View (spheres, rainbow, N blue to C red):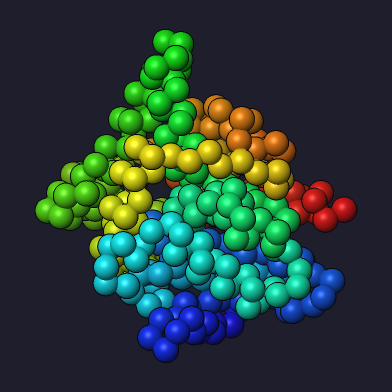
Length: 292
């Protein structure tokens, strides 16, 4: 692995990690992490895939060793996608890339595959535990108004799993929520299982900055969603024990994406840490299928 700084301006840079060697005949895989992580969350996957692919992972703005914007509005999804575009255009200027996103990384990748800026640069997308915010808003709205009782139960179940999002919009409550939801209090108090592995040195700061992702995007997308469709091949990986993202969120995905392959795995939210062999196999087989 090597690490480089991608300078987007004199005062703003993204920290990028690279596994594997550059080769015109080797597919490029770009992996985008979620909250409250940084690009090291992908290390176990990257090490397994590096013999076959050139793997690129970067710390998103506000996380790891990347620059930290001060304003909440600087964390809007459109800026996250512009950062992703800068990474893709720099490291794969002529070839399409295969995207993999987890949690908030998946949310911003959904934006990339359903909007014009990057659609022509993406060969496939593997989504793990992160929906399009627009798709989720339509799913809740349509289900509550027109859905069956079963659909309404699924929506209420997801809302119960999303309690922390509302808290993240309140400065004091967000600090308490961070400790409860992500196991930063003693085990006898914590409500959820954490990363099941070593913490990253920057994780506390990554979490403190990362709540701005929620504040900058959720309310706008919930009340003003846009129709976002794609013909890019999508692989959906759903951890069935996820404490934050339920499978119901993807019930209407066929309306938005024309080519979807769906897998369920008996795992919790940070499945790339706990089941690296299985996730690596899903990614490898999907890319091989798309490439051939």
